[in-house]
Length: 469
Image 1: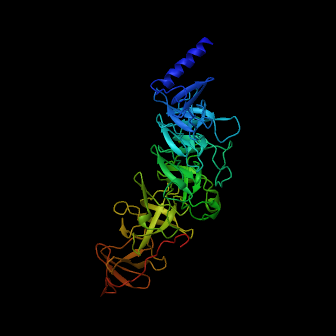
Image 2: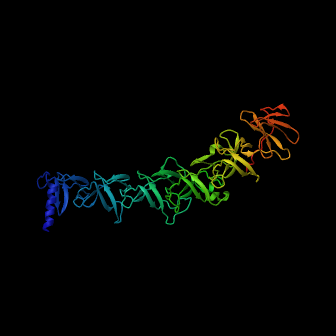
Image 3: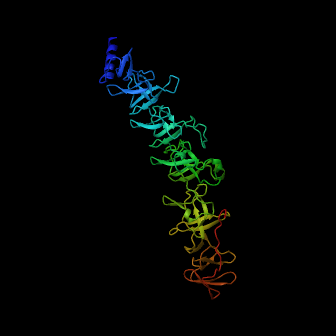
């Protein structure tokens, strides 16, 4: 009892020091009666529902009974401690003034003493969110764009979480435990199409030097992802708009990250009925996009892809093509042949036997220097080629005239035998008795002693037979 009396005396000193004192019936200031503090106005009446300072210059609140409030909410948005002092710059775990149960919540009272409500607030370097009642929030924010830890602090970086809306649509495999990886930027906002200006079903973004894909809910996606949404709406013949992000189990890869370079994979399920092999090689850009090209027979040299010094051509399904291919030269209407190795899928050079689209095997020659890989037009090692295909006379005629376009509206005409070899600096006769004279380059100069014309087509070359042509 003695100590309690000392405390009351000390409190009295704090509250009354420096206050004006009047006569016993009209004393304005703090008064103590039955261990309850009140504040009397100049008429000796209790002050109610007002803030008053003590001699320590700290605010205290007089409730509607005129008693100094302690350990309670005051004036709706403030709180006073056990000494009646208004709380400021402080966390308090207390019951809500709007709740009838005894559950406590965390609140933060700012420098003015007012509780923080319906806003973000940075406290000691961390960001917190408070609802309209001032209760510190945890978990997903109402808009689903931010996540608050169990301490209430806004999270950043990678987090493995259950999504806010468990019933939202999900294209692709579901997780076993219902949780997914999310990434929150330095601002705390999750990565998703809904938090960017791009819109769409997915967002591909670069994080720490690698590209990842997030769906509309912010879930990191793995495996094949159709960027336009529902894979059932995707083309069955093209891999356009698909991306690939590492699945668990791929060696030397970060789960969820795009893998640049070559990768052997099963195609997306929607394309599996339209590929020749169950496992296909793809070449991916750094953002997970597979290299693709036009449909068969529509490619141009502009569609070629150089990888590590080698030339490839990809089809609509993202597969590097193989075999003999018809290829347009740049943006022109002219075309030629290229051959892509069955194993390496690279453009080949030099002489080789090629199976054409009709199943026949023929000798071809593909340039080795300028325009490497392009089917040779003209003479190579004494033999005549057109679009890479060896030109031969029919065995029944012994010799044949083959006119090769020279690119200037004219022709260079050669005389070839049944093996494809050209005649040079000589005169030969075919089985019909026609006489052909050629110069040292093999160019036709006379037919039956009459001068040959460089603007006349004396014999069309035989083009390669392309598959699906």
